[in-house]
Image (cartoon, rainbow, N blue to C red; front, side, top):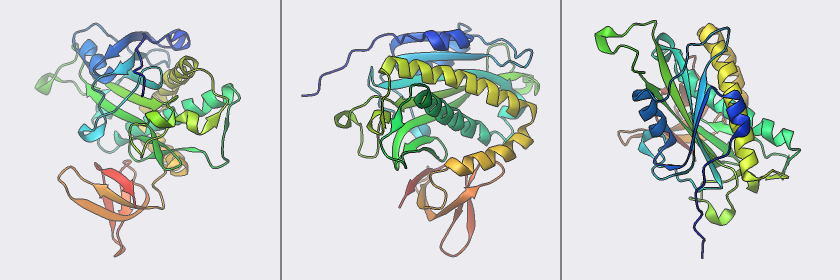
Length: 301
């Protein structure tokens, strides 16, 4: 019989030391929903970026009762085993709404997450159980290990109360992007929610306690979002090209035969060739035609 785990308020001393604002609760429906609500009612505010620094706020919960994934999917998390965090960052509206570059915001979140996980593993002297146990990104929003889902990301754009909307909106205004990051850090094999999911502790030995892992990863994510997004804001087009090369090295789908499932129920099968300049996926079908995929769930065949 599986014992139910009790939620407890996350203790995040390292994250609190580097973030501009940390909200930690034992349980909520969704950390993204809580962050969006608090931004909307003014209880969570982010200062303008000054002196090359970007403000980052964190909303954390030990248990989500209605965690959300991309395209309406559910994210199942378990207290004391899964890290559920949302990171809120102010960026210029012009960048957040520019379809030629805003796709890279999701890719940045993925790279920040890989950096944070790999940095934590290195800090504690942990080691993969197998030499090919590297972490990768499955376009556009999953963290993969050995072809299994270890984590997921969900980004949402929020208009803060001080900004205008519609015809009152100023292109120079800032908006807030909330990046939700769910990671299976300490789930045992018997607690995995699906056969397609996995957990970090199943692939890496010598890891610290769950609480230490969660805090160390979140601390690095705050610093990673701050550093990478400041560079992106300063030069979106230039950063897009360098990000494209960086993602190429960790893109799980690249070179594989995959099937893209679209929200209208249609599918497209082919080889994932790489990413376009706007971060969309290039999928080459059997007839040699290259297709651009912007919104879909992508699974390997």
